[in-house]
Image 1 (tube, rainbow, N blue to C red):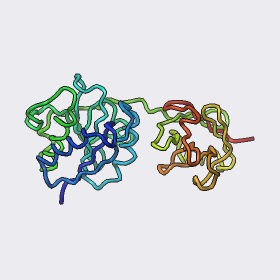
Image 2 (tube, helix red, strand yellow; image 1 turned 180 degrees about the vertical axis):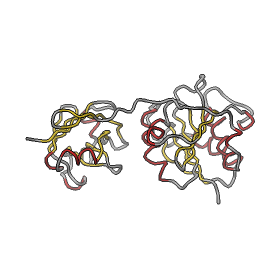
Image 3 (cartoon, rainbow, N blue to C red; image 1 turned 180 degrees about the horizontal axis):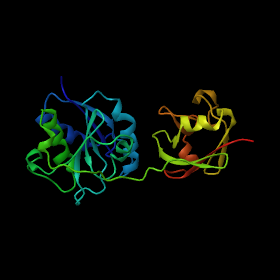
Length: 263
């Protein structure tokens, strides 16, 4: 069966850089199945890329290889790594891009990519996605033993992933990221909300806007209405129906989200 390789980057959906990576992979492993996971990560936004990977990658078949390039430190001393987490495999810069995944399940294997035998002969300092990650992915798809990529490592670089904390009558969380629709995704989960009480009894506050209760879906509210609901991953989301909540509320990642039970 052909190896599955996904690609995630901040290059943009129309970027020719994505095509260059695909060309390198297919030149080495013609049978590879290439899937674009996302190229819409906001430029240099490692945290957003980490969330997208953690949401999507585990849903692929066992053994899928995920190549991720969100790399503001390209060309510096930061490592590039091969990592196995759960049933999935990853190639990425070691800059926190895999840290949400690794916070959910400890990696089985981490290796630094140091064996240049599996890189392109000619390399640039600014496009290691094409020159190192893509050829390494193709060689792995051809059956290369990951041990040949380089020496083992004990740990990955991690980002801080704060958990909601208990406050009077509720929880204080934060904006995890903003999706491509402008929906505000928090780090507060379905289970944490359920522990507070019924959806109708909750008060949600973000950027000075207070919302009463949760709706089941966007269709349960009027166009232009700001609502709270559970997103497809089971997290508290604030959205504007057929609009852009993050733009309307001027909200970015890391901003506080407060949920409380109404008296």
